[in-house]
Image 1: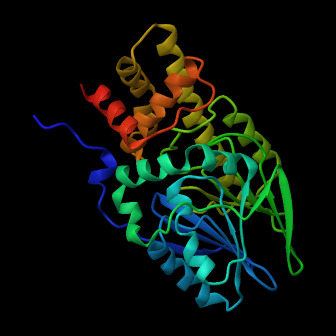
Image 2: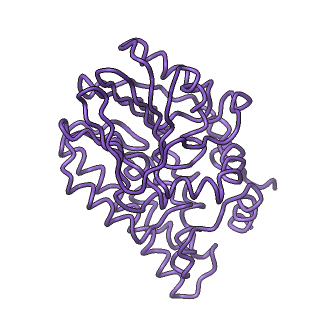
Length: 320
């Protein structure tokens, strides 16, 4: 019997994209559970939050932007370092982007593991890297901030903030204070599995509560539809928090019982499947999620680096 391949390698159906207006200044680019991007249009320039995975895949988003404004795309923001979010950046640089901005935590993760992550992600999920030959290499920030920076796009104030660890140690949100609109990256998901292979699971719930306390009225999650009311935003935060806490609690129980990783996978599934088994990319994410949660429950605080080889080893051990 041939061994199963990564669930993502069988995921070949193109997703329908939507370009949703949130305000006169903000748009969500969403894709049925694929990675989202955000657009902020100021008085004098445009900011893109998360660039898509390749320059070829970035072009439809650039076309959407050009359908609503001729202003220059000046800023590119990395919500975190994952390849599927950032390798399309060169397309915006060609459009005149002057700054690629990331948190210090994100910069440190690119230095530490960016190259391995890029190879790992491309092999895992080929559909999300259409035109991968157009990627010139890693995306490096030209500007790095520690906890917060403010950009005035004309009179429009935009804050870029690292409010805590979660999906990665360097998560960045983009926030329009005057409109209470947030672009959360993968700190918040909705209707899709949270990928937690590089997460700080213990800290993630508190970071979500810090975000909730800011009072966002509209929010663009990393995956899933734009959340367009305060009630929907709260639902998205609750959904992500439930996913993360259920996962880590299950892993802690498995480790305390002395279970192997494969046994932990089975017991965590009993908790996770009834709640999340039908959402986008669940089968792809869960092996990576349980492996990271098992590590964290075992005392491995800093996530181990995923390489293409480690991906295969993990997958084989869970299939054996």
